[in-house]
Length: 320
Image (cartoon, rainbow, N blue to C red):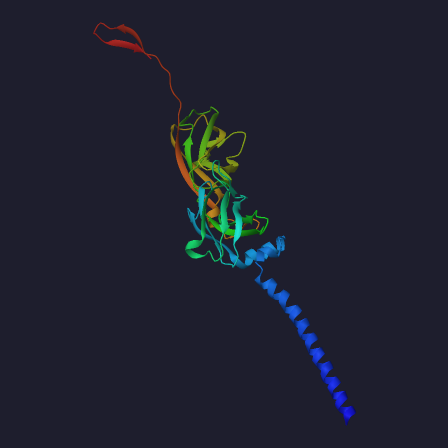
């Protein structure tokens, strides 16, 4: 019996030692984990991955407003951006920067970088940072939504971070044109005449792939040396493009006022059904503008009137 009691006593001692060792190991493991949770995320490291995770978990960049909305080609765009830090750590020495890519462009005298200072933790709502920036829009942009890339980064060695957001900007377009001038009002029968038509872009976006043609009823006036159609690749906003034709009418044409029917067609980007991610056009539509002008056909006659004599009865004789 004494031997059995001794064996049991030794087993109890060994079991007690084993439990103490496990407890020590468990305490050693838990303690560092507690340290990691309490350490600010910005102190964990300065790698790009850590920085990206920090900002994904706490930084919100959103568009408060764009003016005008939608913006048109050639306009100046003003955006107001909200920057919030909803995380639990301050982020120091922060900068917000826009690096304009098509269709956006930097404007002379306008900043593209804003020093935000410190984004304090839980700085949402009224404590957020608001940034206002102005950019230009290229003239040749088509209708659609375009991503404006906003970069947020910190230069502080303790919590260097880098972050990019894409803000969708709505771009509209308004295309319109007019045939504003015809250089000739009168044509001499049998004489070759050069006619110049002035086509002006009076809309808010460039005219692309334009085609101009004219026609005179019954072919009274015909082009010489070319067809009655001219193609124009681009007419920029507010610009006028001149197209010329050499024309001729028959020498026996009856004098009078004759009508020219003119037609201008071009790509209508207002009616595009789809703009792909790469900016290419699909389901393209054409816009047509019809106009007319009058041209007088008729020669001039030169003559002299000479006095010949006076008769005995007082009559005068003239020679024409």
